[in-house]
Amino acid sequence: MVNFGKVLASDQLEEWKEYYINYKMMKKKVKQYVQQTQDGGRNHEQVLKEFSRMLDEQIEKVVLFLLTQQGHLASRLEKLGQQRAILTEHSDISQVSQVREAYRQVGLDLVKLLRFVDMNATGIRKILKKFDKRFGYRFTDYYVSTRANHPYSQLQPIFKQVGIVAVAGALTRNLASLQDHQGSFISIYDHPSITLKDPVIEQINNSVQKLTHSTTFLTFLGQHAMIIPEDVQTSSEDLVDDQSYHFMSLMLNLVNTFLYMVNTYIIVPTADDYSVSLGAAATVCGVIIGSMAVAQVFSSVYFSAWSNRSYFRPLVFSSIMLFSGNVLYALAYDLNSLTVLILGRLLCGLGSARAVNRRYISDCVPLKIRLKASAGFVSASALGMACGPALAGLLQTEFKIYAVTFNQNTLPGWIMSLAWVGNLIWLWISFKEPDHFAKENAVNTQSSDSGHGRNDNLEGGLAQPLLTEAKERQGENADNNENDPKESHKAATSIAAAYRLLTPSVKVQLLIYFMLKFAMEILLSESSVVTTFYFNWSTSTVAIFLAVLGLTVLPVNVIVGSYITNLFQDRQILVASEIMVLIGIASSFHFGSSYCVAQYVVSALITFVFAEVLEGKTKNKKTLNRPPPTLSLKQAL
Image (tube, rainbow, N blue to C red; front, side, top):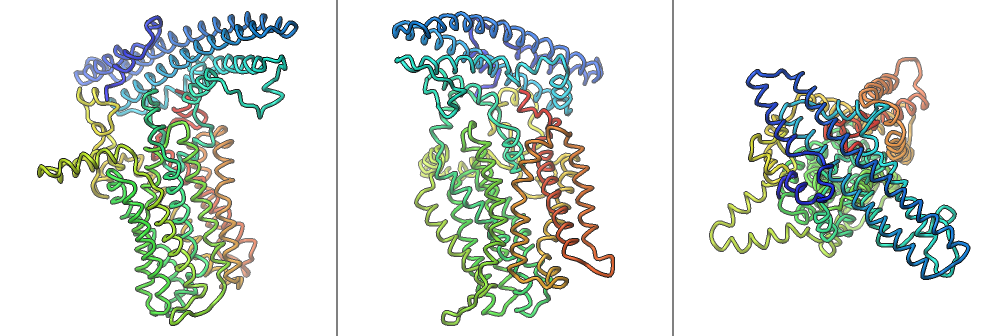
């Protein structure tokens, strides 16, 4: 794939050529800055000031031209509005048709303007990214937050698109009013359910969606799921994306996500009773529950590498492993073996395909619905987390079929094994491997006859890893391939290699993430032990309590994603969440003479809810290092 400079040169409109940002000049300047700082000719402060001033001037050029063009379009709409007003009194079908075509021509010109904004916004984002990469700064965060939040911001017309959206709204309203040739003038405001089917309006909507393709809530959910939108693609790439997208395959990935979370938490209410029935202490339930998460650490590495070559085969393998693990978990009761029980949970953890599920959404879902799919991923996880304990609460029965026992301890394993068999059959029938994998597999099959296929497959398999280097290669070769993931990323083939690629700030975030997950898992895994000891809760009561905790995930994401992130900075949310988690943990201890249900429930809710908030914001920091939440880089550009 060619670099952005060549894309900009080939796709820009000739008559507007002088108003585009001079990406080529700025890229050369960045190289000069690097050389000058290395030679000692300039210090970093001088470079930052000059680069900021240069970028301000380029953005100002774009914005002033954008406002001029918006004015021209508004003037044309005003004249057409006068003509349309006359038609309301003297309806003439031929004149209606002429006015409608004139409106459509304005719409086509608006699409050109939207593409102009899109191309320049992409260039601004890329030059900031290149500057950060070359100098090792987080200059983008500073630049975007200071410019976009200033009362005289020139980024506002680009990322808010208020004027453009107003023009688009006027076009849509007036075209809708001319839709009926019989003279029945309708209003999109009085009939919001009416969708105007006009090719020009659809082009405008698609172009606007490309610039502002998510709400704050969907963006937050996508980041919470660690699914990060890629840079805006060209129209030709969008077309390929749409053609290769397969809805049923996406659904199967979400079903896999849901079933895995159900599988994780369905045993929580009964794990202590199961361990006691096998002759172990009730607190061994923590080992039983946690063994699945331990195995998941290792599965994430090989699944991420496997997803370089296929999505279908890892998902099939995942279903088989989870089926086997659940069968062993269920049979451990009749075999009276704690070892078999833990081995079954380890196999379930080794079948965790969440890395594949996330990557499928990131790589194979079109940009316009990617954040909705990301929200679906988080929703499926939250729903599975709530449904798991709730389902366990319904399995309060006991019977035997031959020598196999079915009770509240074993039924979760049997139920989930049947679910994974059904998932495997559905997967085998309905899943469609993405087109680029199908083509690569065909090429590799042909090349294997020449004796070099095995090496080619290996190289191809490591070409686009999920775990990548934090620093991309420097130099001219990297510049010419800045948009090519196969050239700009390199595989981390082990946990140790991946750890070495992490920056100190990411390591701190990982430590925070580990501690909050540690607190959450202690809360969940020991809930049945604590509540049975102090309150004599039944398995059904524990299951209901855990299900309610799981159901808080989505409302918390709604509140944080839609409101809290617009009011406070990430740092403030992180600190406040950490304090509240500490308060929740501290208040869960038995200090006085009595320990009441209210104390336990309130402390558990505080710990769980704010750990969820902390988890979402920590993932955002790890994956994006994004600017303050009032203005993310994606929203700004």
